[in-house]
Every structure is written in structure tokens, then in C-alpha cells.
Image 1 (tube, rainbow, N blue to C red):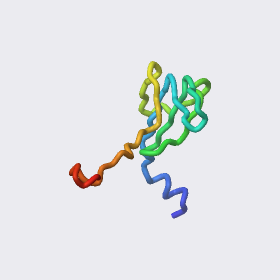
Image 2: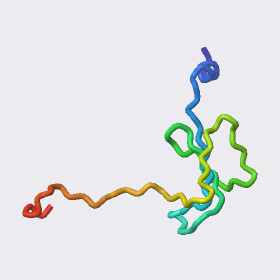
Image 3: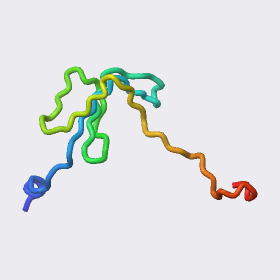
Length: 88
């Protein structure tokens, strides 16, 4: 079988389209408005202005047009022990 024939037999991962009213871009230090975030499976595929964007009909749509979306936060405040006398 060719690679293209095999690829047709594999179901594609689900696509989710999020309409973000405001999106915090921490790398550029700015807030973007009316952005479309496309997520395939568990990976962000693309981010860009929703104006003129085409979303496949089978995509799950999440309307956050009245909300602010920000990157995931990671808690790096860690105690290695819960015993105060161990200074952890």
C-alpha cells in the first residue's frame, strides 16, 4: 500500500475551533482580539484572526468570544516536604 492509501484509512484526530474574544500573547506582550484557535487532537494547530478564516464543518466549536484566553499556567512553587522543620 502507498503512504497516501494508508493515510486515508487512518481516522483523523478531532478538530476543535475556539473563537477567543481576547487572546493574551505573552511572547509579544500584547492582547489580540477575535482570534481563532484550531486544535487537532491535543495539539494547537494554528492561531490567527477569525476574520476570513474557514473552519471545517465537522469541527467542534467553542465560543469564547466574550472571554479572554491565556496560555496554560504552570505552578512551579514546590515544597519537597510538608514538614516545616525540614525547611522544604
